[in-house]
Length: 329
Image (cartoon, rainbow, N blue to C red):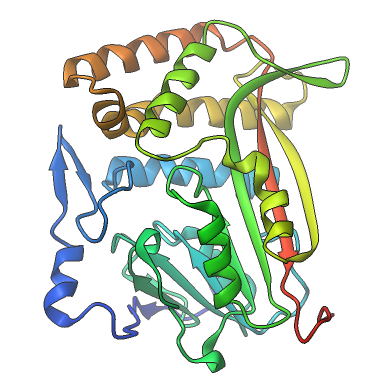
């Protein structure tokens, strides 16, 4: 965060959806197997919200935002932007806060299930607490408040109905506004003579198990493959997809890629219990001891696979909403 920007106390906006009595449920976390989870809304989200997971998410932010996108908040961003941004699934708010720092004249609003954002934030950054999975209404009922940009990152494990989610975003956006998705495709692959092929080594069984567990609770880890098509089918225009490759482990010779691979490997080593704890129990009926054994096997296999040229895709898709039959430039 820049030193020359004054900080303000964190503010949670109230658009008539949680009342004072209801708001207390946001802080009454669910406790399962030594982890804490959100307690408000549908309770469908499979990932925890405790400090351990927040640190792990911060590591992934470092990989995606700092190392891969080189501190660019949006691939489709414009210089001197001074409009309104909605960050969906903001988590700790790290992306929203950095966006607010980079664009001092913009208003950045993050929405999430859990009140885990910092106590002090830039004055042009605010937060909303709500369950986007269950949203049938607009967050911004007044058209005067609709965002110019909607940003979604790492939402693959959170969304149950992607067509409905994209439709909701389109309704929220101001005419001419844009949306950008930034998603990891959790399917390991390799590159052979410039051609991306599925990875078939020992690690693949663990990601297949995760995919089956999430599918059992209604979440498709394949969703990022279809984001571009989904936006086009929803009526967005100028839809562009950019694919980045994330190395897993320290096998790359290039120092920058080696750093990316190291941090991504650490993210998975430190985060696999968080990713798997609830979903394996709910989706595949694993006992807690079976989850622990599975996670230990995953970490051991991952360490042994550190020199294999394994890659993951990081997919960025952005598109623009029409206004009165044309695109706003």
